Length: 428
Image 1 (spheres, rainbow, N blue to C red):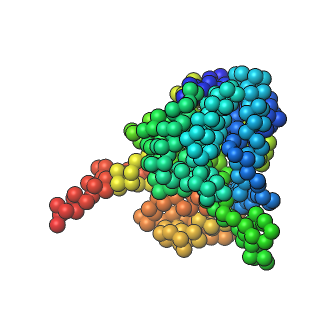
Image 2 (image 1 turned 180 degrees about the vertical axis):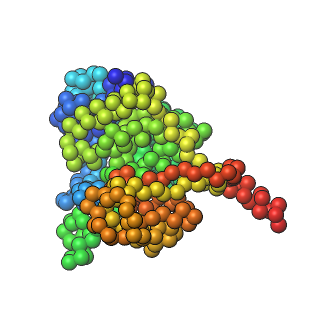
Image 3 (image 1 turned 90 degrees about the horizontal axis):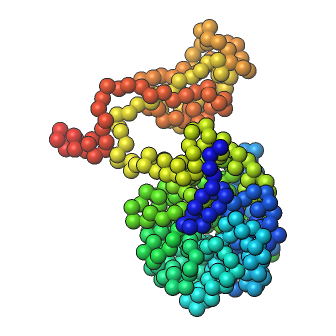
């Protein structure tokens, strides 16, 4: 079986799956349960000067039959004392010496950073994660995303940290920024050993239309919070790839954002992540989901004859290009497998009203009936000369494998947007 162990900026872990800093990593009890289930690491819930949380704290968005497809929280950092947290980190590390245990920190002054780093390392933490991402509550106090949105402040604080740190330092970055690579570069310039991303996205998930108060409800009011869960995965993947591909950054990446399956994990690794942090999925399904993550990722690597996580890492990074470099002469068209077609004709409706009018309805003409299709009812046909290969029909089709996208030969040379512009200028 493939080797799932990792070395993340000098922090060793038996597998890449770590509990992200948050409610599931709040206590030694939870860390023990996580490690017993098989997690490779735990990033402790962020430690700082104790705060007071509110009730309630969470809200969510359901999509189709999926509960908590998007998840919002207005919970802050640990409301337990630093003394308690550092004592429990020490106790946990003694019991689990082979697992990665990371202290997440958020304080204000240079002296506080030095103090909390020393206490973290004295407790046995394998590394320090700097929380520069929290988008609510703490940012109003000049911490969290207020730091992560300002590269100059990132550089200053990471510089303070590196004065005291002996263990690897990870800068956790906010997605609530125009270009996350500017923040990552600042962390690199100041000497950070690694980065983790993404933290949660500033959000309001829903409004109660009887009371006009958004959730979570706190005494007749609410607040913007941090959005996470499967819905944020595409945003996280883009930002991970951007940092992995930037020649000025070149730091190990801990990927975070909507990871709930081994497929998610493999995608994050292929786009440059080494370790993978999971929070919302644990809050939804419990610690034992790591069994499926480990088995699924291992089986996938074996099926591809990939020997390790390290060998998968970054394989997809170079496959992402700026739009202007894509081939304008490449052509795909849709194909319908009529043995699978159920005659819902949703592809026709979507293409007719929302795309390029490249699907018409015709009589069945003796074509085989797919399961559930009504005999004699018109069926869709691709108008190939009008099809631009946009993928919409394949995306809306409810039957897996019914509509596929096929590459077709155009006989034309590769043509980028820059080439096209140059040809247009020459023609004029």
